[in-house]
Amino acid sequence: MTTNWTIDGVKEALAAKKTSARELAADFYKRIESRNPELNAYLTLSPERARRQTDKVDSLVAQGKPLPPLAGVPVAVKDVISTRGIKTTCGSKILENYFPPYDATAVERLEAAGAVILGKTNCDEFAMGSSNENSAYGPVKNPLAPDRVPGGSSGGSATVVAARLAVASLGTDTGGSIRQPGSFCGVPAMMGSYGRVSRYGLIAFASSLDRIGPLASNVKDVAAILQVIAGRDPHDSTSTTAPVPDYKAELEKPVKGLRLGIPKEYFGEGMDAGVRKKIETGIGLFKKLGCQLVDIRMPHTDYAIATYYIIATAEASSNLARYDGVRYGLRVDDDSLLAMYRKTRGAGFGAEVKRRIVLGTYVLSAGYYDAYYLKGQKVRSLIAQDFRDAFTKVDAILTPTSPVPPFKLGERTADPLQMYLADIYTVTGSLAGVPGISVPCGKIDGKLPVGLQIFGAPFGEARVLQLAHAFEQAEGAAV
Ligand code: GLN
Image (tube, rainbow, N blue to C red):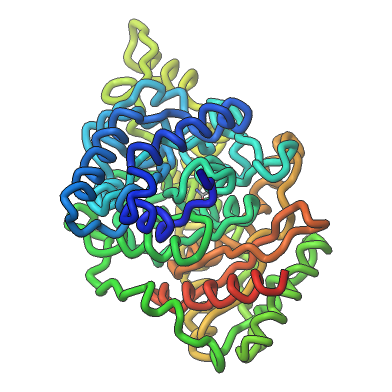
């Protein structure tokens, strides 16, 4: 059987009775069994739940009933997203034995659309990281270059798609965690606007930044997954009531004449020469498609990393206060309550999570709140203003997703600042709340994938997908 499944491919094969949902899932589990020990991309498999779902789909097929949009499509879910009765660790020891009592809305919607959840994917602890090396359950290996990282924090979600161990997956993005691993593993990966997809059931890292989004082997499938998970959810007051357009219908619209901004600030020092070359070629491809390239300025870009690491750590320090050994997960007993808290958190959290709790507590503390947190919020609105200004002149913005190709395992772990700098091109869009996608843009020396990032105006997902799809078609034709 083929391994290169797409959503349409699954649908056709089921309708033509070339395979059943059950057979297809079994086939994926076989591949997972053979490849996962080396890749470490799945943390937990959920074959029983998958079986219940495939039975439902197969009975629809047997009865000749119409199939829902993701019928029988094997998918994977990042382990920071709640799945009822299925272990959800957030890549942390503190939630080693946590079984959520409810499903995230995104998960519920995937299953309602017929998708089959194969299991939960590895990630940096509480989604804090850019390489998946901060997982308490070991790093994930890049399936295209096993000595390299797959990116992070959704490293497992990108890896399972690239290695064909799922047709699509859900990741989460707070500062780049969907887009950067998508770029490192050579798969399209999308973050919708803040509020586009419900966060209900997403275990919080930084609530004003966290978003759930899809990764898949092609842009059309990314659009199909987003279609299903997007839209208002009464359980998340920050989810928007803005209607969800028909993304697939928008995909094929011509991109000729669209104005694309190239911000000078994203092409400065620190960018790998190989990445630069691929991105320049990619941008040239848009020109060939008839788009108009416009030089733009986004003057506050330089402050984005500092601003992000103030706001994200502040929110993390508050969100992670709930892991106190009383209500969830790990508890290390002691006679005094305070010692119990200390021992539980000391044993349960890894080094990076502790670093962020300390940083976040500091920037929120009396005397420093105004100088750091409040200042950070002000700079955040200047960065959002950069985007608003840009979108008065252009329809979308093109940048590299990451300044560097996938780096070697262990290469950046000793220097947290180096690791933080990996997010330099992605955190801006996170702070501004705009949608962004990373699309594959060739490979350096035919080996290391490069991702091109397309930012859209708030709730302009359709435009972002349309451009990404046109690019993917042109890129495929050019190779
Ligand atoms: N790499 C960034 C961080 O470590 C982004 C993480 C994310 O988007 N979840 O915070």
